Amino acid sequence: MMMYVYVCAGFLFLLGGAELMVRGAVGLAEKLSISKMVIGMTVVAFGTSAPELLIALNAALSGSSGLAVGNLVGSNIANILLILGVSGLILPIAVGSKVFTRDWWVLAGGTAVFMALSLPGEIDFFGGSLLLLLFTGFLYYSYRRETVGSVLASPAFNEEVDDIGGVPETTWLSIVLLVIGLAGLIGGAELLVNGGSAIARLFGVSEAAIGLTIIAFGTSLPELAASVVAAYRKHADLALGNVVGSNIFNILGVAGVVALVSPLDIPARIVNFDMIIMAVSALVLMPFMIGNKEVISRPVAGFYLAAYLGYIAAIAAGLESFRY
Image: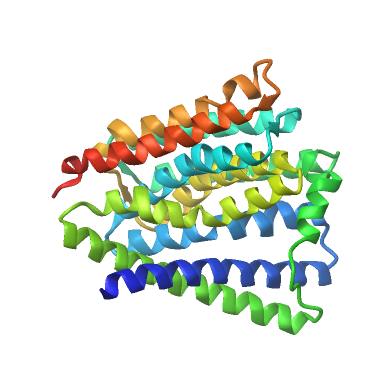
């Protein structure tokens, strides 16, 4: 029973911690006169991906690499198929910016590199260094790009930053929220990893199965919430930006940092099946990114959502492949 309490409490701590950390960091950044553009590229982006980072680090250091990798891969699948599916059903997503096209190429290339490094069954220090180097290059490129204007510097993007409620008015309160939020993230990650590992042992399945499903869904909740709100406010294009940016952060930034700290053991089942689904989920965006399709319509969004439900059903039907 306690394992389920740990998982639920872990999700609450993660979500609450990420929210407080973002508020504190935004407040501190504003006191330092940092632009909304930079705040959005760093603080907001990190805030929605912080759960994946903390869980992956905790799991890897605890010897649960399968859960860490499962969470990263499962989260990237959920971000595209689930989040864009739900957001696109609320409001069709316009894909009219060249920024999305450029970022999609980074996502596609990063996914290919991540999969290639995973083929031997482990991403070591060298692989982590390469991923982190690519991620650093992407951040620099993005910063240079945003200084001359883009979707992130648009009124819609500025509104997203402005909509972060409860931003402290004093520097000391910003620091307090930042510290409390970070503590919540760390504590939530610890509870989730322990609870997820216990559930895996109870049902006799690998931790990777829990990471691909329950944990991945939970850590995608910040992106889902942000994207649904953006769609309701008729800024559905921001949902696409959030998803693509978060996925790049996961496979380059999070995987890179974790592999530097501890080698990531990649279960063969994830390499042979789940990573292929992750790659296909990125490729389904190709017609909209480099083709002549400019809107992710409701029927297409419905297909994405159905595909995600089918993927979860396939995992449930094939749990034998996750047995010890």
